[in-house]
Length: 114
Length: 113
Image (cartoon, rainbow over all chains, first blue to last red; front, side, top):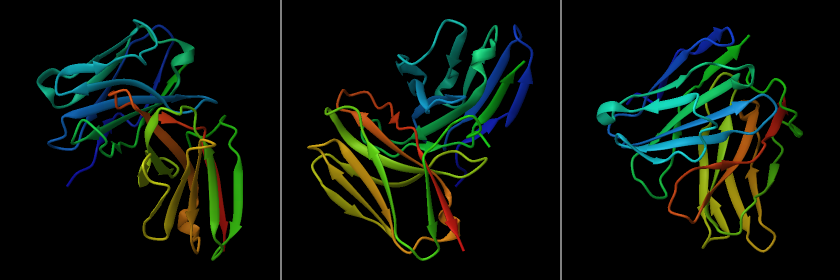
């Protein structure tokens, strides 16, 4: 069974540009999470989808970040416009059940904003 | 790797030794705790979990201990191997109905042959 996959693995963009990250969860997992680690900090939660609905978006830093999960399968996270402090590693995770289930992580996308 | 710029406490051990990695969690309302291992260039990988109604759980070569009185979690790795070298994170889930993981800062484990 394939694990969580993320694309791209690395992205380097200029400040002010737009970047879209993609996450494909494990097949059949209704729960999809986005996390990120910016330089020098711990991994922080961004948001949680249950199917196509946003269950919890309390970690989204500001309105430059837009997450979607149309159709309840893969998800995208768009940063527009990107700022220097957005640099870091963005992780996606998925789980089968809503409560108390293991979250399986993808390899992450390293975003560098110059 | 993505740990550049992240100043992590480091535990250095010899191959074959037992390792103990400690974590202080933040919220007494947390009811589920997980240890993750992260190798360079990879995402966090689940190791073992424990619920707040337990104080000890064992897996293959790993044991997690939970002390709710002092909000302390530890991961014990028996007969540590070079392949165990990685960054280890504890994470907690609050008893709020939301399932977001709250991660600790991590500990780097270095295993020498």
